[in-house]
Image 1 (cartoon, rainbow, N blue to C red):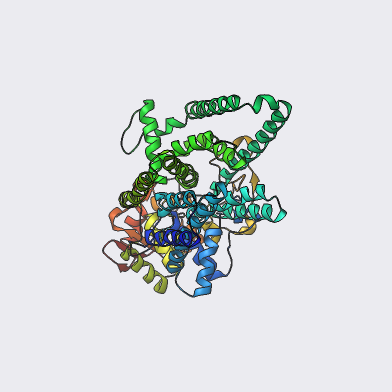
Image 2: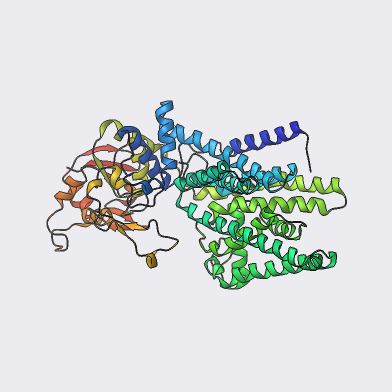
Length: 548
């Protein structure tokens, strides 16, 4: 279906405005968990003038020890320097920008799949309403959100490079793939797309040769219809085999609605998980898949989306990450499903009315879904922001905390190093180690990980085994007791090495420290701080103590 030019412009403007409205912040400060660690690293770039963790070309894409994909870190740091505003303002602006880039990318990708204005609008609309995309581009450091925003553009350039095979188009496709890698390590999953592209190209070459060798067989109308039906049954069976045979459903035994090891419940939990991440119109992907398979005179792009859908099935066991790469594929398939529903109805006006009523209703349902999902999204509180401001102007050195998440938020505002590293977790190979000077880059010894030890969850093909273990040191500092021979004398040397000047105590875990989701007794706070150090700051939820 084609629209007048100005109608298309108004629909695109509507998508842009809807994208901005959906990302209008409902919290007083930025949100996220790891995002605050990234914000702290961006502040380090601004203050020091360089990224201390970039010690190898692979460090920029997070494939080297003590590093992290840094595109989403350099962006807010650069905007901070150019604008002069605080990092939170830069992150808010970039979040809005990523939402717009993602929606426009989905629109041009849909146009590349099918030169149909209605299909392009509906696919971009579905992607615009994907809850996971909205939540990861709402006042959050653009790491996963940046990956989701640029994925449609990479797919578009891959198709464009096939349709117009010039060096420029292939170079741009490679460049966008590199940009994806700088936002998140999930870019490795784009290899699935590339492999599906290669397989599709080979399949079309074989099909072309078969048609040339046996033209009478393939050109018969009856034969072509039977082959189309057979291909649909075959692809459906293959998808079912991949879904059931790869063990994907085993990770979906537990869900928000039901818990069981029965096949129907697992399938239901999978559908709910995809709907929660990709939007309420996700069920239309089944109809869209049928539309792509049954389409006549299919070219590479139609076969490609079918083979990508099959290739992605085994990756669904990565339940924690599927919401970051599935929405754009679901948007294309579900968008085709909505258009197919309109075309298959005889009463076109009624079908269009029903379809657009469903689209309008999906906005309301998405709002309800976002409200539900946002309950599990953490945001910085005003109290944490106030503590961060105090630390920024009146404290120095490293802050030892008993709770990693508020520690990372306060560090993001104050610009001061903090322990534990990594916010809610304590990763040994964190980029914070180099950023805050806990590790000397010249002393890092790197070894290659054996190929048989690498998995999809591996962060890097290299390791730095001799790096100081910040996680162990945190335990030593908190749990040291003079009667425990494991630790020896009080670790004054660790206080000096980490330049610890102050201790941040979350009152909810008084005399304890939080690690791996559990509270453990902190002898350091109880015997060394409370009775031998001065309190320099107190709020409703936090103490700041001098620690030396």
